[in-house]
Image (cartoon, rainbow, N blue to C red; front, top):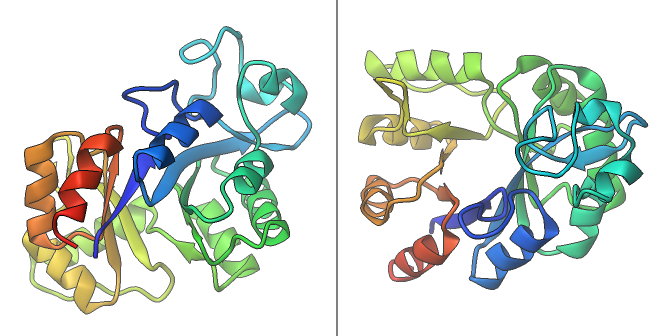
Length: 234
């Protein structure tokens, strides 16, 4: 049974990665939230995608150069805020920084909120994922970019996907001209016990096609479109 995650809260209708977006994404029936995290200058895990503030807030400069309080005044929530406000939502948390300190602090926040079981971590980078896996082996993680690449190559030549450390792929359908999610890729992932969660799927026809292929989750800016489609198949 596929799930719907509101990408950055459902960025098509509300400012991305804000409480307003998360509230709205869940209100239209999304099963969970996908969002991005990094560290403030005072070491607090905050929810923001870009490393700078200009695109999505009225602030300027780098996120890492501002305190959590300063960022909060710009409607940038902390991870602790999100965990407390949505105690039942499934979460995909994307770590945007290639380092271990962010992973350590994210795992710490998840432990304090008793949110390990409902959370999955993702990152393009290997280091934060490796650190999170070491600190909390029960925490679900997505494949890093190198791990995804190796799995994709194996699927192309008909070899099974191998996973000793990750439980899911959090991937786009395509990367440039290269297809990633195909019926064969999904089949090989499932044979290895690995879930396939696809971002960012905003077109209804694409949603239906991916569900036909058996993907496990749609990560979308438009949960109000995805939810009725998925519910119609449950």
